[in-house]
Length: 150
Length: 32
Image (cartoon, rainbow over all chains, first blue to last red; front, side, top):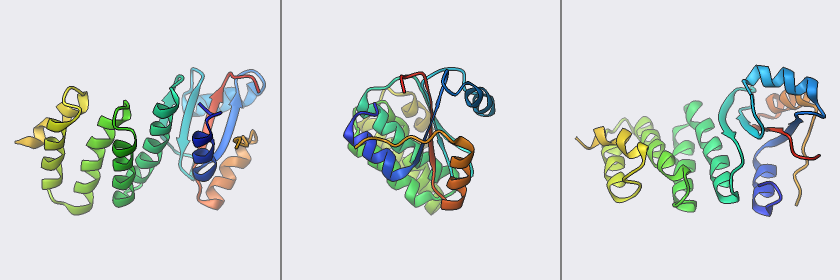
């Protein structure tokens, strides 16, 4: 995942990168593993600047899926801090850049929610449900969005 | 480009707060 130039650049530009090795830093692994409930490697956490976990990636992922998950982490971080417009922008970026990845349906769902949160207009949710009729119809996120089509 | 991983986690968390910058914290078993 990390040897990829695009991943390395994205990580460097957007995060303070920190690593705890399970054997070489056994004390830190135990201490921070308990703090964040980590039981397996690789586990990669997106923490906001207060050290609060906003997104979690467990297990290896191919490069593009990993890149999408990093973006999803930034989007979730903005969303959970109530920064609706940046969150929507990030979620839509995932759908546009990685339309065939696993993160796409989740990002499409939360983009609609972020737009609704920003605008208070329920049409944002209806539009999202209709978008799921065009793309990701069989995903669990389409089921979650289906109630908005009514 | 290579990622310059930091291993001083307490300091990283302090710096994140001071710089208002998110952290990517990787729990790894990969060779260092």
